[in-house]
Amino acid sequence: MSIKVVIFDMDGVLFDTELFYFDRRKRFLDQKGIRIDHLEPKDFIGGNVKQTWQLVLGEDYDKWNIPELEQAYSAYKLANPAPFNHLIMSGARETLTSLKGKGYRLALASSSAMVDIESALKGSDLYQTFEVVLSGEDFPESKPHPAIYEAAIAHLGIDKSEALVIEDSQKGIEAGKRAGLKVIALKDERFGVDQSQADAAIEALDQLVHFLK
Image (tube, rainbow, N blue to C red):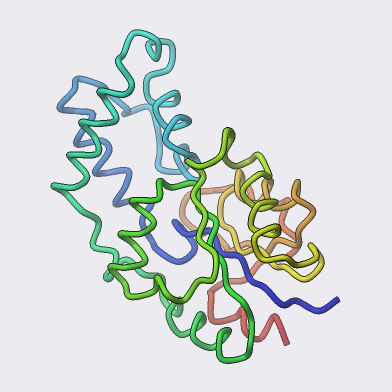
């Protein structure tokens, strides 16, 4: 079957947010006396909120009031919002417009919280571009578990062979493959992410239109 639907990850694929998120998170944690000097941006790529706190706090995870910490960080994020309109990936807007113009259905499946997804898409005027928008926080397990991609296929009512996933993280690529989908990696040149499980890779989003020909 030919590809009818393209399912995008968000951070690192449509928006170049990873360094901004890392720096903002580090500033917040510094205020709480939590050091993450031993961690790198790539350690957070593709993870959800729970995975992030487990990574940051390590053996001290159970000593913290996680809901209270999350609430404080949510307030910090509101006071220090990501400039999504300036972080949109080169060629992303044009690629999405071109794909829609060619009749492809578009969906988004991100590990980020829905409030962050909506901020990104509405802040860049892309929200109406996607037929289905799913957040990892709505599933018991996030990527690399395949649930979010399985749900996307169910929502769209298509066969797995009709979908193509665009990912950048190792967790995301694994999730797509475990869901039985074809996965294209947007090449990472900065963080050393393992993308070896992907079926193929593109250097930039604007290559996707040619890839689908």
